[in-house]
Each structure stands twice: as C-alpha cells, then as structure tokens.
Amino acid sequence: MLLQNRVNKKELKKRIQDESIKRITVSFYRYVIIENPQELRNQLFEQWNTLNILGRIYIAREGINAQMSVPEESWEIFKYNLHLDARFASIPFKIAVEDDGKSFYKLTIKVRPKIVADGLDDGTFDVTNVGNHLTAKQFNDAMESPDTLIIDMRNHYESEVGKFVGAICPDADTFREELPMVIEELKDKKDKKIIMYCTGGVRCEKASAYLKHHGFNDVSQLHGGIIDYVRQIKAEKLPSKFIGKNFVFDERVGERITDDVIAECHQCGAVCDTHVNCLNDDCHLLFIQCEKCFEKMKGCCTLACMHIAALPVDEQRALRKGRKKEDCLSVYKSRLRPNLKELLANGLSKGG
Picture (cartoon, helix red, strand yellow):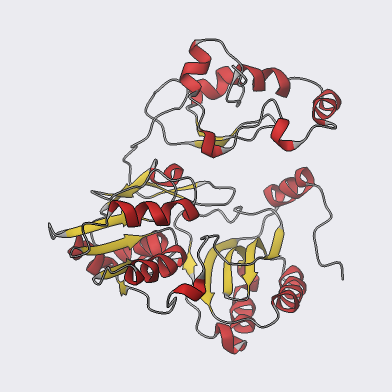
C-alpha cells in the first residue's frame, strides 16, 4: 500500500464535499515515549486510510498530536484499535463543537522532532511537572478571583476572534515565540495564581511545566482546552466565559462559541471574525475579510493578489516558476502582518 496521498487537492476537496456519509471531527494528544515514530506512522496510515479517516497527525518520540475526521460508521473500530495500544489506552477525545464532518480532505501523518514546535530544550526542565488540570466549572470559578491571571497560550490570530474575558493575550505568531514573552510579562507576578488555556490542551501541558520551572508555583490549565470547555458548559448548563470564535486548524477555520464578534475586517474595519486565506495561490495569507470585501477583492488580500489570481492558471504558474519562496512578490508570512487597510487606501501592491 502507498503510505501517502497522491491525489491532487482540488479532486480531494470535491470528494469530501460530495460525500454523503456522516463524520466526526475529533482531536487528541498524549505525551508518551514512542521508540520508533516512523514505524508507528506507517502502521497508523495504513490502518486509518483503510477506514477512510482524514486529518493531520504529528508523531514524535515524545508523543502524538492529532486532529481528525472519522466516518461515523468507523468511529467504534477506530477507538477500539487506538485503545488497544497501551501507549494510547483511555486517551481522551475532544469532539468538535460545530461540525459538518468536512474538516479535512486528506490524511496526513508526519514524523516531527516534537508534536508541538515549542523551541524548548526538554532536557533542561521536568516536562512531567505540569500544572493542575481544571474542569470548566473550576476554570470559571478561578477566573472570579482578582488575584488570578488568565493566560491565552495561543497565537494572536487565534485570540483575535475569541478569548476568555480578561485574558492576557500575548502578541505572538507562534507558540515558540509566546513562551519567552509570557515569562517576561509575568516575571514580577510569580506569587499570582496563573490559569492558562489553549485550543485542546496540548500547548498548556508544556507551557505549564515551563512556567513552574521558572518559579511560578500556582499554575493551572484548562483540561481539554476550549474544545472540551464548551462541551462541559453545555452539559452542565454553565455560563460561557469564553466569547467569540474558537480558531481551529482545519478547513472550518473557526467554531462559533458565542454570538460575540470581537474582531474586524482587516481591509475595511467592519465588525467581522471570518478568517480566509487569500485566493491567490502564490499567497494564501490568513486574514479576516467581511463579505463585502470578499466580493470586492475577489477573496484576495491586495490588488496585486487580485490581479494575479485573475490570470490564467498557466500564467500564474509561469510567474512562480524558478523563483525562490522568499522572493515571491505576493507571499506574506503571517508574522509580517501587512496593514491591508493602509495598502488598499494607498492603492499599493504588497511590495509597496
């Protein structure tokens, strides 16, 4: 069996859209020693591909981190097979809040140095000395104390559309960048009660241990992250202290948690929290765009991208041919954060 996908993206997306079966979007992780990540990767690909499972999974010597779309008809056998492996016995699942099952269009399993890129030398601190795990109710209660500091351990584009009320949201583009920023910002607050959260909990596992290593003693984390928080508050009829959308790393981009819209269109400033990727294939900048700007800009982030996206596909490919990625005239890394309103107001292309 070929242990990787060979079908083009357009065809795969059409297949998932035409599909009539029901699917479950689920995420899970576990820090556990995996002696041969490549061997496990191949075993899981063969097994999950047979079950028509889609998703993005990272495997490293330190564990597994997965976001998946599982056919409802394959759900029980998927769980049974995974739990048969002692390393993943009773692994907790986080089920998506808003889900039509079309969250992924292919199965990708990659072996990585780490399951989350944190930039840390794990040998310098005890990665198992993590913070206390809080339920949704415990997290809500902890937020009521004036001595509690709530830390969002996600990237800026995630907290931009949804966050816990009163949370400190570091202006970071990556988890790797955020950890030292949090340590610096809280260096004079080591006596405070720290509670942290992320999407599904995996980033907080490492972050809480890192904070404790740096002298923060009262550190807790939201167990199961935002995804499981929403499940719990619905089941227990608790108030949601999270407002807006929960950003997710799949085709859905975001899950609506409350009706609050706390962001704005990056092009016109209208109230909006819809993330899109620029439709210029040479760009794909992630940004927030309202319906009016989507129609006006044809789903693109700048006039330059709109011009390129309107060209025949062969001409677009010719523009990219032979160019190094860093030289692309129309590619923005998210960390550069172009001021799209200013660019459009001045009628400039991305190159200025």
